[in-house]
Image (cartoon, rainbow, N blue to C red; front, side, top):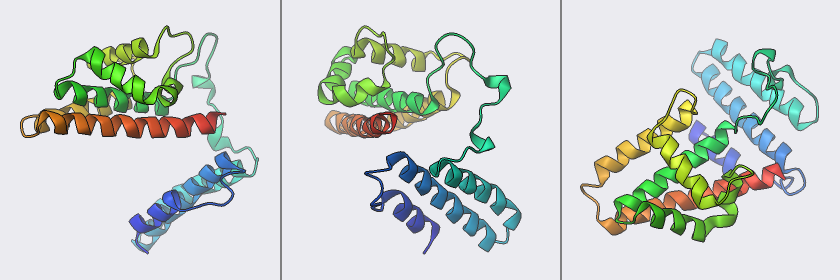
Length: 206
């Protein structure tokens, strides 16, 4: 089995224990993925690069069985102090994908407000998982995220900003050859995928 097929089976295959132990089941999926990557490196004659992936797999195994591992401790240099902690990177990545989807809708002829309202109407419950407590409305939150991605600062999540910029670059290439309906279809598909992943985030956090 090649690596792609093995990773497809790892992340898309059925796991009977997922209903009872969803977080542990997810940890074990990543464990198997790390082992698969490590095995590929070993077969390619890069055994010295295999060990870090095995170490991470072992740490995930410990975590899935309730044993603490130093890989998942917080370094004192970045331990949060008082005040609200920063939002997680996976949340910002989903926000970036959502905002990119909004931009695809706008390229298809919708105004910013129309595009945001459409996304919220279709996926309010899932997308609200990406919202910080205390925000007035989900629509306002999405508008604020879009402003941040369009005018990022050094304080913003660099990976999420890069993802958004890459998606906008792809949009600019395609908008000259695609019809408005096709652009909106791309946007709707991206927003739907964000909603699906946000729903998974909701399940893991409960």
